[in-house]
Length: 149
Image (tube, rainbow, N blue to C red; front, side):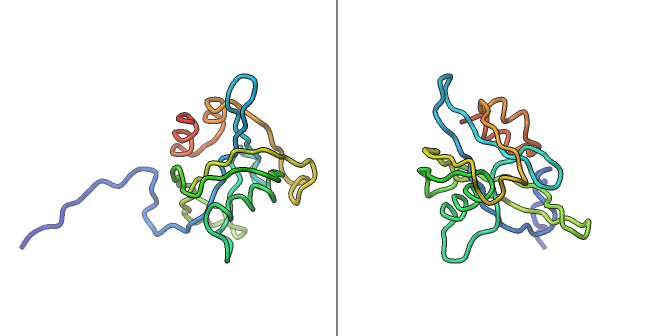
C-alpha cells in the first residue's frame, strides 16, 4: 500500500477551511513615489487595507472597490480585474471566537477620495510609503505584497 505524501502546512494557512474575502490595495502616485492607503480596523485599531465579503452581483474587483468606498472613502479608482495576491488572517467574531479568512487582494489606483463616506466616524485613514505600510500591518503575506509594490 502506498502512503500519501505529507507536505508541511504553511504556518500562515489555517488548519480549518477558510472563508473568502476581497481586499482593495489602494495606491496613488505621490511626490516621493507610490503611496498606499491604510485604514484602522473598527475593533482593535490595527492598520489594515479595506476588505470585506464578496457582494452578490459583483465580481471580486467590484466588491473590493465597494469596500474601499464604504471603509476609506475611495470614490473613484482604476482597479485590476485579477488579484495580485492573497493573505490569511483570523477574523474576530462578536462572540469572542474567530474564523480563518483568505483575502484576495486587488490593486486599485485611486483618482478621487471623499472626506464624507459611510464609515468615516469608525476608522482612521492615512497614506504611507509601501515599505512603511508593510511595517504597520500584521499579516505576513500582506506585508510581502506591500513590499513588492
